[in-house]
Amino acid sequence: MPGRDTGAPVTTDTLLLASFVSVPPGSTVVELGCGSGGVIEAASGGNPGCRWIGIDARTPPLRVMMRSLEGRRAVDEVHCVCCNVEDVPMAFAGAVADAVITNPPFGTLGRGKVSPDGDRALSRSGSDMLLHHFIRAAAHLLLPGGEFIVVGRPCMLPDMLLGCST
Image 1 (cartoon, rainbow, N blue to C red):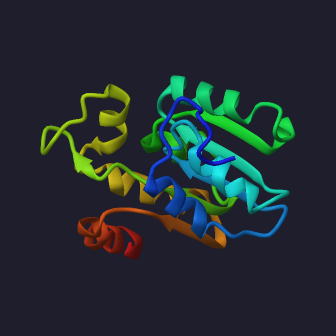
Image 2 (image 1 turned 135 degrees about the vertical axis):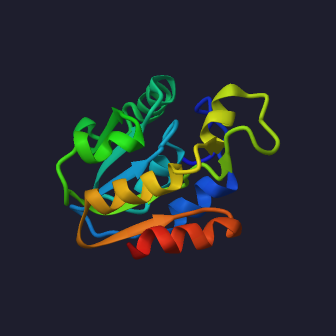
């Protein structure tokens, strides 16, 4: 159930991204930068019979995700993979996902306000090229005709459009 205390806060971004996911049973959905799996937890309830793959560069949030989903779904429906988004095209076969969802970091390392929470600071900022890496990974994973759902700040829109046009 979304909002349950899983050790990570459920944010508006989490709920917004989850609300956009609408895929038929049997679909494979990959979340890039899944953190502790809040989006997967929220979206899977409205999309039964799907295979969910959460990819994140940090192991502790992936452990939180698996603990929070334990006993609530068949084990083979949710998988987590520890992998940097930059490495996804080398680590995964292409064209495997019906949908790729993500809420990529919206800040740039070393610029702007930094969260005192280390995990939150990591999930909110990255290199100048990080958004491009998220888009590249999604393009690699998506089946032809697949759906890419991304939530970001309005200031990210030009970079998102540019990244999706290549």
